[in-house]
Length: 329
Image (cartoon, rainbow, N blue to C red; front, top):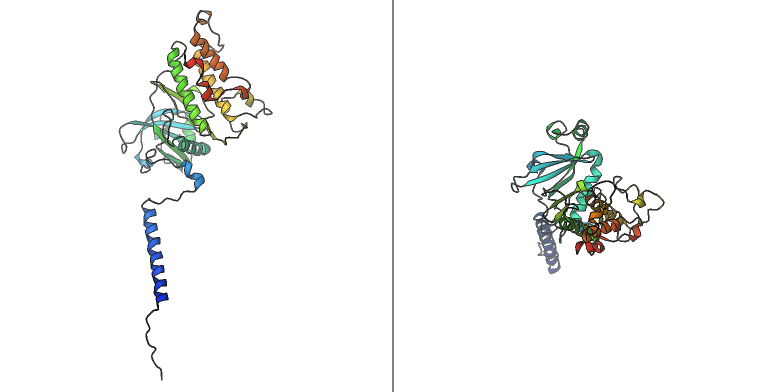
């Protein structure tokens, strides 16, 4: 005869086990909810330095929120447009579109700007407010972005399967000061060297300093092009031929056997080249005799010569240059 088994109540140990399981499930659910709410974000330590602050990027934006206004210019790597973003405000912005064959530059610029935009920031380096390092080209079958581009540039853009975009505030711009306005030229150079010192202290080298990549307005020099930049280790002492920009060649990069230089020295040389051009009215830079009594002008030429010292080891840092007499007279 089958005798039905008596029902027994769970023991104390079983009850405790069930309680622990229930608590674990609740904790896991709560953790998931916090992650969903964005309150718990696990970021690998080595990547944390590249995460922008919330006020520096508008993460709610989409590409469709950008309204093209007009073409600003085109280079060998990018096309730049003046754009509007009604979701933010009615101000003007710049959108840089990188062609597919140069998407590595888009990734470099995104990474560099995130590092440079970490607080405390520099007023000379505009914030990267929105970016997509690589996306499907929405204009591949459109002629909208080709307005103002020559045939080759339009072909590069429209045949790219993927593009990269970065959006920054449009910085105001006025004519660069020259030897006719030395106090203003000193302010221009002081702002530029301060920004360069800021970047070098964060181990970032611009690699592409020339007048077309700079803007100046009311005492502030803006450095807005960082797609050729390098992030280097503090003890790095080699500037490799394949890494640096071919348009700006410090003397030490011409000879492949003499590349053992501090990487920041090349930026200093390029900055000296900018100053030298602003001080000179011709390719051959000679100071007219009638101006040789001008102490500030002489100091300006001495500063440019110091920055363009042939031996990279003898070139000063940006911080040292800011102590020069040109900024005191």
